[in-house]
Image (tube, rainbow, N blue to C red; front, side):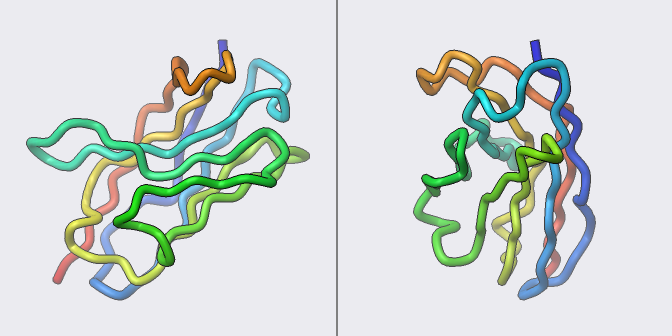
Length: 119
């Protein structure tokens, strides 16, 4: 199992930036892919971005491409989500997750951090 703790959420205005962090513990961090997901009020949880073990490859949902950047620091056991040009529709609880199997099955989740973007 992996323990994940997100931080960095908050209330910002449209156009502002935020950086979310997710600290991992419990297993060798560099051995598993990491992802960010979000859940807006009244909606299901959706994929935002993911990054492979080395950080060499990143994947994004279309709505955040060019605005969000996922990165990781394996020495610090931490994954980041840099969010620029935030929009009100980015308002959601953001979760980080670990894919321990390497099959795209995210089975370890953090508690989430709230991001609210006002217009």
